[in-house]
Length: 399
Image (cartoon, rainbow, N blue to C red; front, side, top):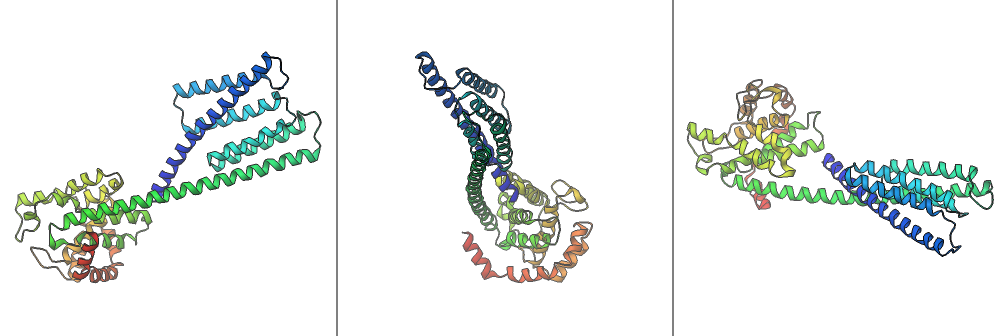
């Protein structure tokens, strides 16, 4: 789930970055068009209302149009467009400083941290704010651009105002991140609720076809997670994926006739071949739902054997995904310890012994060794999960 959160967060900022770049383009375009028009009118009518350099403004406008043409015919990444736009903005501020003719033209540089802060990226804000501070300090000392020469107090006040605005930009950035985090959290929670509802619907649809296996999916899921918790490879999000894989590992049985699923006698070869189709059918079902695609490996390979004699692909050893190897043990344990239409369930000791007997042939030998440390948990879970009243309550909740 952490990977999903990061993915959504990155998508939000990719979209936000592109939008801000577009907004800055139009802000620059409108500002320069108005400035050029304004100063052209003053020039034509010889009005002394501006000291700005019209030629410099036209050059800036031309460069902006060039950037627009480049972006139209060359699809650049959003980060590259962001860099070009901010570099352009910094260049325009420098041009305005030298060509505006205003004694307070140093204040243009106060815009730089505000513009970069809108992007909501810490590194960008820091780099460009620092760059702007260096340029402002240098120009204030070497190129004062004023009717008077600023003293040390004026320069320190300029730097102080700049730092204050940069700090305010950082607050804008933090607020933006906070809003996006809330959006991402809301989306993930909504997705989790929706996916759980879909999973619950699938479980009811499958297990309603065979009363003998009611609760099987939930038990397999819990056994699998209990075993995986003792493996260092599993993080919280991995356990969540395994939990859902356990719940849906038999979803493909929805395609199998009830007469075959509930048959009390031995299955014919043809019927067994029908049963063997359920991992493939289940895998096809989950891969059609975007948020369930990661579960495909567990659903498809949970009937593979360590020695390569399983189905449907006859994978062997570590070529079988770890989720599927864990589910194979959990699935076998639950199948052995519960009543089926064709036999009564085995005792826990007998079930553990059969798992031990299958070590290195049917089951991953390392996982069988780890199982020795999980036996007590399995026994406690068996007592809790094989309660018919609780099973009925679970069914009621799912419905």
